[in-house]
Length: 141
Image (cartoon, rainbow, N blue to C red):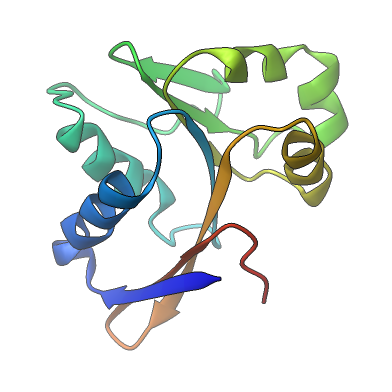
């Protein structure tokens, strides 16, 4: 089952509020979309709602950023799923909070689902002058 929101980047707070209202306090959220789709922009908006008042940037080179005590942001663009697992970074996902992962592959998604983690997925697609956000457990295109 999925839910769709079509909005501009100027109104991305609508997406962040929906996620915060509907998702549990401990979850892994896979953010899928092309380069420039707005994945990090969505993380920035979620961070505002977590009362994070400092810069939120993509952790492309550091692989992970932690904002506050319960918001974690991963960018796996430079890693494949096996590298992520072999580095032991999946153990970070045991920390309480929201874990937002950009550029994960299907192997990692399946591994975490089978391992019993709460997961959700947000697919971000260009749509007219804005974006289409498809939110769900197993959104497929």
